[in-house]
Length: 295
Image (tube, rainbow, N blue to C red; front, side):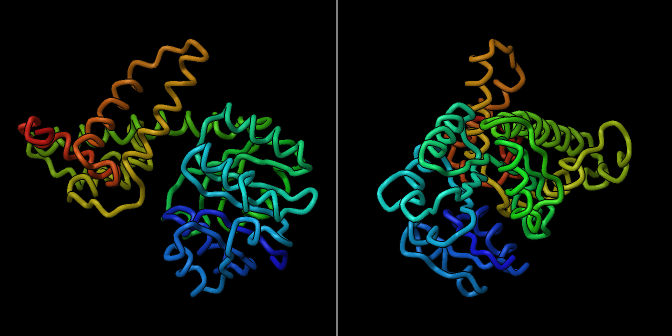
């Protein structure tokens, strides 16, 4: 892609997205409040920007990878934000995972300023970004989503428009409910296998192709079994997403008892100082006696 693309937010996920874009030939300008996070992308061929507005000047689109609605708003509409450097019709692609209602408000504010907005949260994490194999769930007008899909084709193998603004974020919350419960179920099953004397590392192969099979089972049961805690995600980010699902459940009057329990366990681990750890650290919940974990 010869058109300039801006990336705002070069943390773990944003950095992985940026690295893939640069590696596949995208002309990328990057801004992050922490210059150390930008440096690896610059070394790979991206250009460092002095502000979000600077990164956006002359860019066809702006990709956001941030952690919360207020941060997204500041990065786009605050002083020195992307909106200051954006030309008419610039496409804002928000790959953050944030509240659907906040997204609707941000999209409306963007439209009032002559900017296009697509919410495009992701599933697959850092490993899938590196392979260009992310799954993206998107919200926005058909034309805007189609344009975003062209730009994101180098990082994603599955892109689906789910509806108007906010629909992508709603779908991401559903994804996180399934992932949160899936991680917890596989961790619990690993603990049972270990306690019963079965080699948990062999279970994914034994169950492959059956009804219990899943990507989480295949990737994470071996990691749970070996206590491989290398970081490809964060427990406290799951708390954020499950809290978002709980908010949506209250708004829609949807009972979600299993999700509530899953969120509580993630909050307990975060309170115990494990919020920055990967989902693999869920195994810490099952080591006993449990009281030791929370003393």
